[in-house]
Image (cartoon, rainbow, N blue to C red; front, side, top):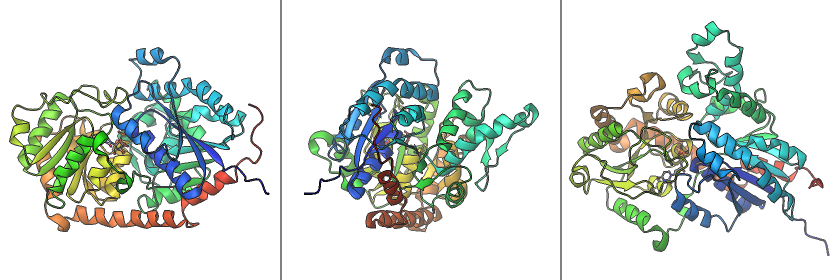
Length: 489
Ligand code: UDP
């Protein structure tokens, strides 16, 4: 009898943060379900938090029937925790770097040697290990293609400028892509920032990968996808999006998800398209003043809302590592706010089942920090947005949503050049009314629905295994990877 060949095995590696973990999980699940691959997912954490400790274990439970999952923490955990003065980027890079030996040891002892490793933005320090173990190396950009284009080209562009040119820099031209405002890629482009030392090697590692995956599709970012796909800036590009949690596939049990079910039941009672969903991602937070203004702006808009709210802090990434579990107390909100908005609004402390909420027919708008996963969850449900970026790539995403796709409106202060000050309650009221009024006749909503149609077409192609589909092509590349697994273990 002919011996059955083992399935091709690949390793995925997610850096800390729900925004990195969720698309990796989706990628892994689809490679197993639709392409018959074997996938091991390493999830790097550095304090068990990642913006949603409880929710994370629940997400993992729903994935472990498909994937082999390993949770990994850096051995010198206390060193990471004490590095308080480090920027978020530095913490992420150093955390991943510290995990190389643990992951290497685990891979070396696997019964079926994996033929490839797929890492996100912060994981390219694993390239040396991959070379040594003769694995193919793929980089997965979990944000937009435009940010990917900026990420691989901006560090080189700014390094070439004279001091005078650098000081006068206002916009950045990336070949055949949308011009980006210098301020929107400031983090990448600030060559005086000590973290700029990370930018170039990370960009080079992306360029040298065996392929780059990006969670987008042609109709969402046509020029950028064409430009990156022509092979001049990068090697092979796989635009594999939209990879978002499939809300309909998830069964919520009352035992684990009492809170989530109560939110969805509240939504069931609201009229179609009438509720604004307000959330600032998995780990971001607002100042006390901004929280106060947002509450009063929502209240005076008289629109229905669900607001996922966190205790205010002065550090925007306060909850990124520390987790999304909290006491649930809402005593930081304006006096009487919860009582006055009862029935119209629902304030949810810390964390909500976002993919399910955005897929609900009662949702008519999303006030979002413009994380890419949140953006895709909104777009794939045809929900228009108020774009309120807080950090990093979110400013580039807000520009795409408001200027190119015209499915979002944006407060003036939340442009990089807008000064970053608080958005006042009156402007919030105006934006909310503008987004929510007019029902299906609202042009923002009509465009969001049309965009959803383009996502539906791609998802259909992915299901039918079309050769045009990038995920299909990527699975084929994994299968034809290194034929002889490494003996160098
Ligand atoms: N998320 C969620 N509930 C929350 C907040 C976030 O389920 O209360 C999920 C959200 O659906 C998305 C991810 O966490 O899939 C956040 O990723 P995104 O890229 O939008 O933002 P990040 O937090 O990484 O900036």
